[in-house]
Length: 295
Image (tube, rainbow, N blue to C red; front, side, top):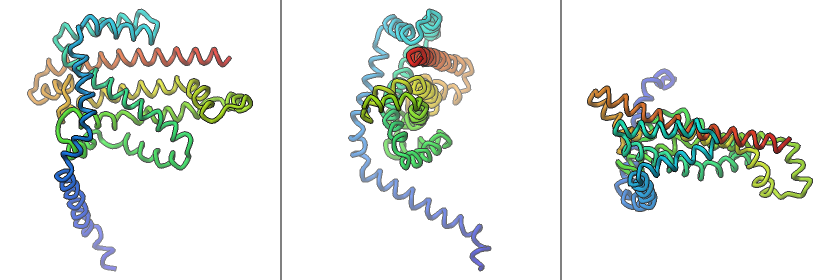
């Protein structure tokens, strides 16, 4: 029975040995396969560089025009268009245009990858209940884990740079799109599904032509949250070499530059509000359209 009383004091030694074993194994793995891992992620690095160069080298009037057009397409509102143009012009006037374009390119690529991975995972989560339980646990861990923790394994595997920062942002931002895809499909009216079955729809036809279109407003809410979380993670990811507004904020903190920190913070807030208004307005338009169509 002595071990029972000694357990709280003895457990740190056991825990220390386990931590040393895991850390040592990871270091040995990265030393042995580090170059192979970098080669594996080389296409991703080229993709990130392409999008960043595309945004930074594009003429500013073209960028403003394209984002304003996206705002009009999403919201059909001149207020949103005026807000988008005003935000971008203000960012340019305070000299943060290049860094803002780098941040927007990272957020856009993160959102694209999150959608491409998250929506299929949300469908799988909805279809298979056993898989759903496992994924729920993983998503709970991903959403409650402190963001700084995500940086440790990616830095150990890939070092400092764009790719590890991108992976950390995707891990942090992807849970909402997975959860809300699953939720949107589950909220589809059962009577509509029964009507689809009565017309002889297969499972894939029912998914693609009935469930996904009706779930799209909820999925858009997930995309909105993914964009917001990606922007929130940008500042933290700057600690491992991600350039843009987040790096400027980090430098402002390190050097105690109040004005630099405030201006870059306002630029991040402006981008967040701009994309939030676009995605929310588009989601509401879809919801109104689906509601009218259903009636």
